[in-house]
Image (cartoon, rainbow, N blue to C red; front, top):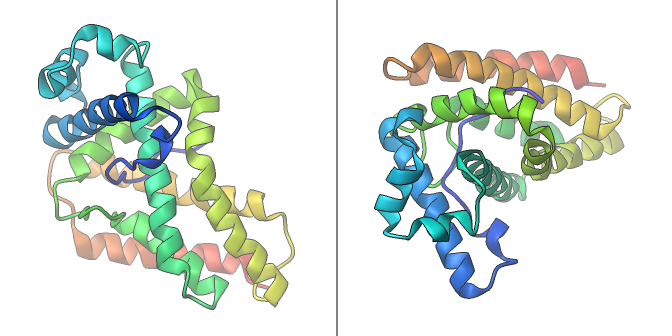
Length: 223
């Protein structure tokens, strides 16, 4: 699986299996991790800092996570589910599968994934940190990362399947097409995030890049 995309704020969805108290404490830990990444990047995310921010005991952390990697994976899972939900709402009223995919691809590249996030909000520091972590965890924890990404891939594959049915896209396996599109987009965004890590993002450059990437994807899938 390729590099990570810009990450929105955590969603409530992944914690539905916990009882109310457990859900609240888990969400509190994940939200604290998210905010620490936003403020100070990867260097600012430590278990001690999370416990200080949440005022929870160390035992409360280790009852839910085995270590920092599990916490980062929970941030990925919650955030990518939130992105899939947001993109689903964005594209629900869009009749053309081509336009729906364009909206998703462009939003990933520009970095506007909801919860107030944009390339102008300072979220690039968090996104760059998580992109670095994604590369490492893709090797050490590939199954968990795949599970976190699946809702977004399913959404994209649904639009691909609809486009094939309407004759807009050439016949192909929708999940494979969705993964190829995502891998191209996320790998390119990863490179941009690392280039921007020491400075501020350029919205105009991101929008131009989004247009170029989408044109490449469109030519690959059009009937």
